[in-house]
Length: 485
Ligand code: SF4
Image 1 (cartoon, rainbow, N blue to C red):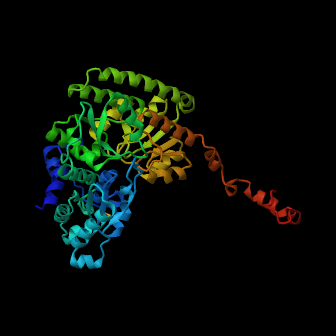
Image 2 (cartoon, rainbow, N blue to C red; image 1 turned 120 degrees about the horizontal axis):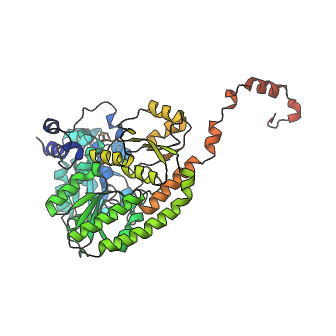
Image 3 (cartoon, rainbow, N blue to C red; image 1 turned 60 degrees about the horizontal axis):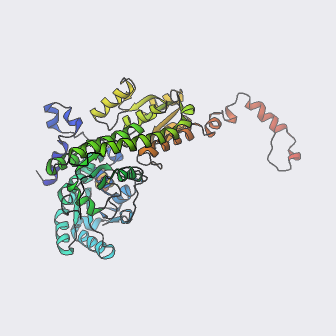
């Protein structure tokens, strides 16, 4: 078994994965691998997943070893923002061609790494393996090792070629690269009893910046974010954190679990979406830090901050309550946790008519059931035809989903709000829930829906009479002007 096969097998057997744990012995041994079907990579291949997980480390040069289309496919697919360096937004690729297939791409890769270091001098270069060089046998680990020794700079191989599996598997393989080559390679300048890591937070549309001031106020230092607005050197020191919050259990559970195992960093799964979930996350991290030797008054200070911020958030949400009360929502989320959004919307009096449980764990499912009191409105898949029927028959007033489902809502002339990773509005923290509710309100009350729901002129029963009247109108009088009948 090759090193890559071993790595994939170990990730597929991740003991921290709730889905895996819910399986029987026999199923677990068989792993999570599903037979790939044509077009299955449309949702993102393993390479894409690894790049999504790591590209938010903003001061690193992310070099894609492969044909240019792989880089084109994965570049900037998320609005993850940086408070400093912007090198992560430069698309670096070895742009392999037919000649490289014949002669191999290792020399080209080595030259590309040298060129990047000469021109940009980043703290590290991440090299992503893709299908083509993996199939012709390019050894990116060896090239990265040689380049790191020659140039005196970390050159990190991310071995997750697209064909090994899904985007989600790639997320985890990206995390494995951090565990193998980055985390624990540097020491922080100083440590505090309140150093934490955020795992699975990508700073989409600057969401991290909506919650960081809350931690700052409590004296909790975010030592490393893996990976939103991350810095290579911070991630390298992440092993010195006292505790961690895991924000996306699906993507980087292996990182959180292995860091607990290797470095004794306890973690819990939290969410920053919704008033109560944000407060919960602050409460839990404070309690965890106290157990890890943090200041004893931290929970008390956290409660004071929570009370103040919740009061502010509810005051800002108050004007929306009357407008949104009883409005029915269809939730079709992927990246953002269903249970967080469900509880957040219920907090403003909205009614959930259905919520997707795609990409969720058994734990997530239990939480939704607990919040909604029943599992009747949960669905794993909702084919576009069924989704269209629900919206057309006005079973929902608004749909919250990712961009790919937007056209179903638009066809059904139903308001739609982007909620997944392509969103343009930061939804995390106390400010985030106000943003989400404001976006829903704007979508619901946009006058365009009344207009598009009117029958088109040719759909009116009396359209023929209208046409005759128009034709019999004195055209000369109009003198070439648009006829207003
Ligand atoms: S890595 Fe493979 S599956 Fe992914 S974009 Fe490149 S060629 Fe396609």
